[in-house]
Length: 314
Image 1 (cartoon, one colour):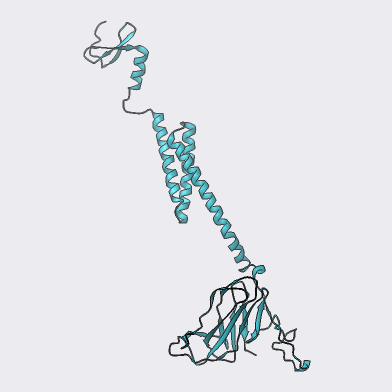
Image 2 (cartoon, one colour):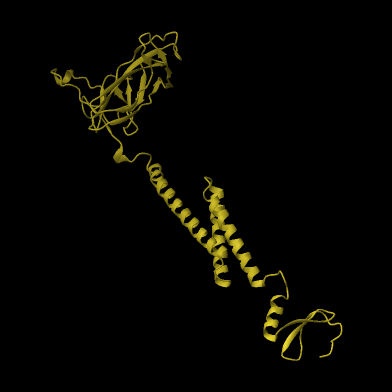
């Protein structure tokens, strides 16, 4: 076996069915079978550099996992725009993960990205469904004009005590089809008359009386009046009080007067809280009005009861 000159280092056939390693200057004692050496030479042909398929698998897996994790974090934020971006990234991560698994194989990053994307998208779908179900009733209420008609308590007027006077002497408080009753088209209910709703809740507003604000009062004007308002819960269950009086006089809005008397009574302090069955609550409200003889007061016991207008206008 003659020396092949200054050939580059590598494995060469020694003519005896084996390969011997040439270090570039001389033969070494290292030999190997031809098949093994060829495989080793192929494996070490590009030392430190993974095969192109492995590189591609890593790229797919890293990209899918990154998109899935970022998307999962964004959908947890309480803002709409980041949530939408998060859903988009979850979809991207899902697609890349599927491609990686189909083309390359079950690489752990791709599998993890697939699981994270599926969980994130399922969470988003559930959250969207719950939100939509909670918005639909409110939207239907707005389209129907607020509280459903079946839940709103309609007011009726308690009839006045029967009079022993002759029919010609009975004075109808409001012109209507039913003597002694408030017609549906009447402008309001006279002060002092009790209003009753279908569930048994009643409300009364006394006729206005002159009021002189104290030195501690807030508000007031040339004509100040005070009303006494009473709500009685005649229904079988408790009610949540929520009153808000609106007063007008001679076509002009009234101005509420807040005051505190020496007795400790707070004027215009509207009640709140729960009123149990059989209980009543009374409070007084003071208002500055344009004309004490032309007043209307609009109020109701709760949000579930239709508002009623009390008035002294003729």
